[in-house]
Length: 113
Image 1: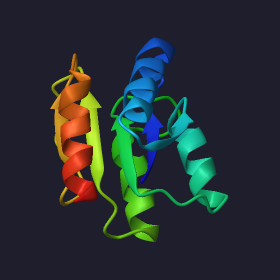
Image 2: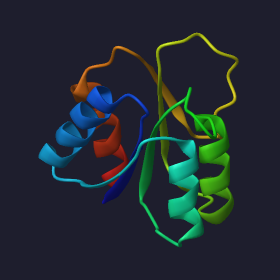
Image 3: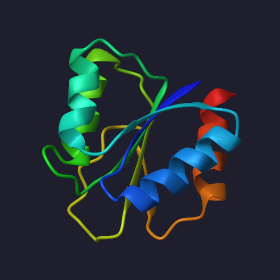
Image 4: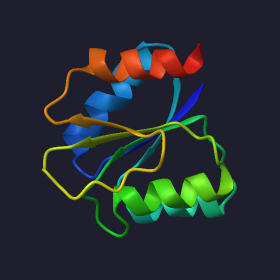
């Protein structure tokens, strides 16, 4: 399973990438919404999306909507440290920051089954 991790905080992104990789998933990482959208435009396919909501360029909601246009059943896991207006794509799951990697891996694991 290939997971796209979109997080602008380098430390948080490194932690997330390491945790997801340690759980046995392949990871592609993007430092912001614009980079994630560039991957989509380049035709890079993923099996799941793990995205922060507040991002430079395009926010997590916009990234998820764009990916869902191309991959309608793509599982999306949002992580956020802010109470924001909810706009998740249908079927998306939201986890509040700070989160434990076990939460993320638990959700990813249900999507593999």
